[in-house]
Length: 584
Ligand code: GLC
Image (tube, rainbow, N blue to C red):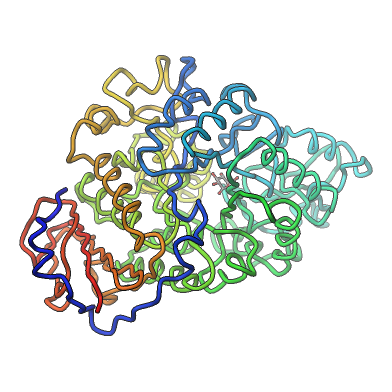
């Protein structure tokens, strides 16, 4: 990385040329009216894999507290913790057996309170993950509900009789594979589960259920947290229970296509907002699979239900139906740009986006968004530049700031992720060979994002003194926080540079977004404009040199770049530059 000499400024100052056809928007919503979470970055932690202080091979809350300064160095003012509640861990905490306690493997409530307090001292607030579409089958509510058809919680989950032939009430396939219905001997009925059989769906139609969930959310607000990420929320409203047209050899249809974002869901969510979030100094971000950019005005902004939602059209590009891994598809850079631009544009006057390229369910971005064979470090830096210069709140997922890449373990038995096992089976059913099925697993398994954090060059990358619950990535000797902190050219140093740059350039928080060169299949370029000042990002996502048009370069002064200074008109493979321009 480098900064250009000041003398260039004199030559270029006063230039006013934008790419042809570019529109300049007035700075939207005004700097001072932005909320704290709009100016900050959010750092996402998968607690199981972050830092283990007691040697049991599983990360814990004291491990997070120890690393708050590291997190702060990335410009993060909030930490999204994936679930830390008591759980049988069938889906690593997304199967919750008690909504208002801490799983002993992560520590105690006192550890949590210390994390919140130590975070506050650094102006870093905790964000809890609310998993309210379903609980664990071990939750007391479900244990009671399943006992009979008449107990007080009989209607807290979704129970249906079998079809006359004894089969499941509908042909829906759960997201992790297999029927979305499981038979219960005690009740002689089936219950519905969007995900694993151990994750029964709660019945949101029942007002008692909703109130119990709201109480749980308020419990955490009272602990002084800074926000909520709301899991799988687009599935809470179930439409009619009818069969769908089969989409695979198993005669079933993916439940997502039947139940995601259906009529009436927003009524529930407006109530949720009124009862829990409204008027509180917290932010909310919903996981909104099935919501498309055109829906956003109903979900975010002044008439919306959340402050932000994760909308997945850009993440789902490599998948034909956004759900079944064994149908990967080719995609083009213009599709990625269109997807990102769509949500940016829809929210430009009303609403706000989270910007994200990774999370605990996704491949590492260096594998996800770049051609095979791309240099990991270069790709990671390019993605970082885009992440931290787009409009919205950037979400950095643990390890992304170090340039983590996917793993590729030889056997399906090496994988912990429950969804990898389901998807592997589907791939075999669809007629793929075990080798091909493993290729899908290598690309899409959620374990790619869940290998332990790499802190240093010690055994197990300094993550644990014991045996880690998931193997450490083999690249840890060079890809780790300690080594990268000492290297000004590392991915980590680049993230820190960008965090500082973002803080110092209000265009990047307040400025309007404008896509440049929308047709280009190699370069993603966009401008962020506040008043007369612009910051422009140009990122080459390809493995070939890309030409920057003369009219693009006119009036621009390069401020930062992922590579040492090169030829002005050429972006080298995977190179990103950040420019400034002053409008007349
Ligand atoms: C969300 C979570 C994922 C989990 C699922 C079920 O998609 O991000 O990790 O498996 O919901 O709770």
